[in-house]
Image (cartoon, rainbow, N blue to C red; front, side, top):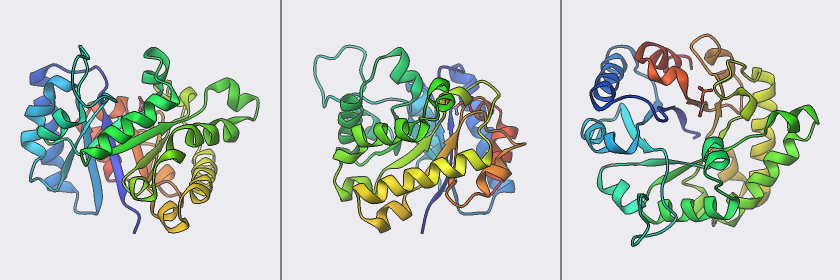
Length: 253
Ligand code: PEP
């Protein structure tokens, strides 16, 4: 059975107090309003993981993700955070390959592969992000572009490792722009991704892989996006910073 997931990526937003208020508001709303089978994930900045983790550990309603992980196990890597550190504060998922990390921090395909391996070695599930820039979409090369991103990082995993991976399709032109991919555009890319995955891994694993859509998803468009066969949920940026909007998106299945 394919898992449905809604994950909020808080990026570099919120102070400590604000982060704790946001997560407890979300938790209360989920408790009162959501009874379904959706896995809800919050992705706070590093300094708040420990405190937010106290609320998510042993709580079936909410799960904890980190926004980044080092590809290295431990040692002299100033400013980096290892998978073992994340695990020790209750992190269950980690974003890998977000377009902002690829663009501003020059994370290449091999590095992303190593980050996934480092996370998996600690039992943390990678949420691998992929997606094309506008010029590739306009040139009608978006399928090839995303296919190559999968080939360059994901295809090196074993079947067992791949079973733990979540994919997030995030067209770069839709991230933080207010311009969402249509549900039809999302569906056709998700189906394409699933087909590529079935060539790399066994067909059942590809069928069972959760593929999220990300890019200006909000309470107004989530229902349409989530109604599509291969859209198994969302990776939500801006709208995850407001408890009401985020919970309404969770309720959109
Ligand atoms: C994101 O950055 O992962 C994202 C989907 O952002 P937004 O929802 O703000 O477009």
